Image (cartoon, rainbow, N blue to C red; front, side, top):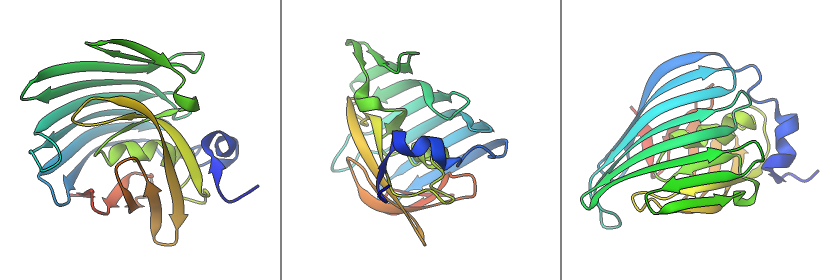
Length: 207
């Protein structure tokens, strides 16, 4: 098998999160080069994650000021089941819900209507500007331990627009951390023993 794998090829053999410890904690990240904070309450039971978080960002040259509160739930294998998001901007508020059904399809519900898609086989949601959501594929595929290079299809939620599109993240574990290529950045990150981001170069640092 080649060094670069798809997420579906790597899931069965990674064993990355099967022995993950239980965890209850609060984590905060400060934006790099921007006035932005993300804080999340994490409840981790094996591979299962419940996360209650909020991102607060001041306006920049590329986006307006916004606040995004979210609730994330995965199943016992670490695959995302549901994301609820409350997005607040000067123009108003938006409520969103993204859920994955038993047939591996995603239902995206917004005030503008409902979208149903398999999003190219995605098992994860990635929230733009959030270090936290990287932990989903990192933990499930053991990238913080001995996992290999991998392409991860995701349901990508852009902030602050609220647009939802299919995307692919590329992760490459290295001796110094994990390199990542996403729709908005090419960077590198360091993670802790549980697979949660410590430093995401150019994006955010844990405080």
